[in-house]
Length: 295
Ligand SMILES: [Zn+2]
Image (tube, rainbow, N blue to C red):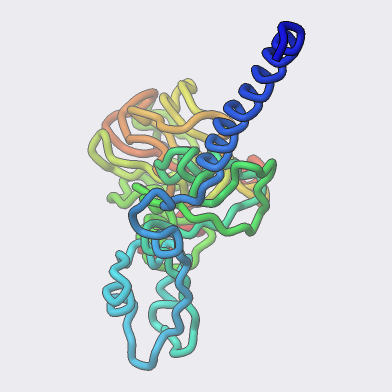
């Protein structure tokens, strides 16, 4: 190799080196980020994130099925959106869907991944990883997502708050009714007025849940209502939760029925700790007792 050849060889070999080495790093990076979950050891992804379809056998109870697959009853109900009616008539042959490590969630129209992550108290990245959504731009209504290690299961909460019934609205919490809907003497001013909701007496700090899925229209301080949340539901319905002490949701957020919204309190025009709950239909207040499932 003479001097001239050397001059030409050096840049060429440098280029080759960069290509080979850089390419190797890139390949490793690509391979690593594309590698399926669990490929680095531990339980295989098939075991961890498997959806089991199970046909109920004659004479079998939900509790038995839950035990057989070591799934909590809570997750079983939440993943299948079961109601008490379903529980009573657990027909042999009916198929249940099970996800051992969390909840199966069906996406609703207008619901974002961020909403879903907040609903279940799970990180957004975890939902993306487990459901292989990295390369996706959209999620679709009706689509089923695995929610691993969900700390909350609103469908189960809704089940409890609706007394297991498939009601249009579930109770925001359970507590004694201290004031009904209709004309009354105002507890503070003493004047006659129309009570547009119901009052449920509960100690300050009691958890308040959404009566139905919907979007947060308002969350904050609002005159006599004090700290309050307004949810917009489908079919022109709104629900109001007033005199709260703490709010966990924000305007625009999509909420599931049974999702924790706030803690009850005694803010605004309130004579003692309670939840004021209101249902509006196209702006007109309705008697909540006529719409809520019987206790
Ligand atoms: Zn009230």
